[in-house]
Length: 92
Length: 466
Image 1 (cartoon, rainbow over the protein chains, first blue to last red):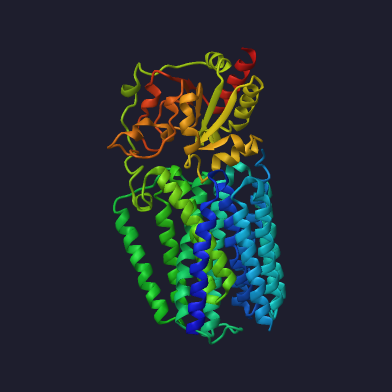
Image 2: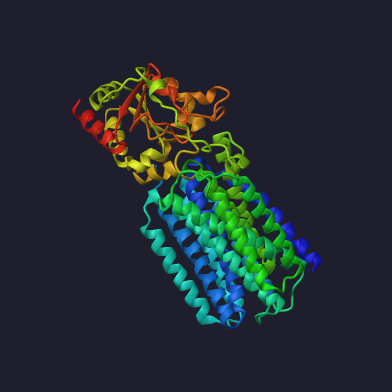
């Protein structure tokens, strides 16, 4: 378990650096789409919600699972769609 | 073997997420970038679904279909002016989902509910569950308050009270104490919910005192938190795609927060724990401005614009409130038809979220080439014939250049260097910083009093007739 923890900690640290490098280059003009787009990406918790609610049984799990699924999917679908709508307006 | 397949798919998704964010570095590639992100999400979700034993297929399908419908309705019906509160709300959903997923995972781990993860509790899970609960709950309630403020459901004014800092410190300390208890005794689920509740209260207390003009910073910070909450959930489930995507978003939010703080010349601590807006200034502005400001009218401004070669608009949140964007576009088109160069100077904190003004102007089909950031536009003001300030105040206040004031050191748009400055404003009332603006008394400044939309509409009319 120790190795696996260090592994995912490594992934975390490297991902933060990649994030900093990439996002620093986003111009201010696109900061709003960046926020709504990255917001949609943070809806990745959806994957966690699927894991959590797909592998459990019982009413309690179902309530938690459904709520988490609804929240996360709203975040994902709404986020990507609204970003798309917004970005299409940026024209030369 | 199945396991490897899943992680491989996650790797592809992670690469697509990064390429997607890279696409956002230019308006040309941005639409494609966003699609990459959506495809990455689809891959991650489908692979996870396929990998599951699908004990609860109706629950999964029902929950996702419901969320997709809600999200789509929000995304397709929202007005561009309401973008800050929508992003705020979505942040909250992400944070809330993280808390619930962490709860479900913890219950499995301690065996309260049966499932694949049962019996696998260790320190990594308990610590990351606690982090996920705290960050997720703070994000959830903080975002709901931010949404309510931006939507006008509660006052946008900073709500400050005696002993505010002490209350925040106490609740913060209590959060940490309960967090330690949860880590020591993860099997007691009621403790977990107490923790989520107290963290939620903390989120509430942190955002309630913050006023409208500081919202860009708060929204950016909550954006970062929603990512970090997802990353923490990734540690709970030892799931790589959650960790990678979560930290990308976390980094993005932190960068935006830094940019916003720098543009206000304030530290994050100062925004969160006090300072601006603490004491609303009640001093009568009559004495400061008396007899020193020059009022103008649409006809006079139209004449000045007619002989101009270069005009710069400086929009602020007031333009969005007055919904004057479309009138501004009409005036721009009329002037460009006469060969006048028109550009827009946009301060990083103009509006209620990072990049807010750009989206509003882009919606009016104003070319993104003309939307200039502060560092690009500032050197051009001395060659500018007319600068039209509409609905902005603090970001063009020259007193920022002098020491000792509440906005000292804040980078501003040097509009006063242009030949003529026209300030469109309802009255001489101060901006968010609560201080008078000497710009209004400058020799080259003309005040065009009135509602933003009506004033520009009149200007369009007068310009066309002139």
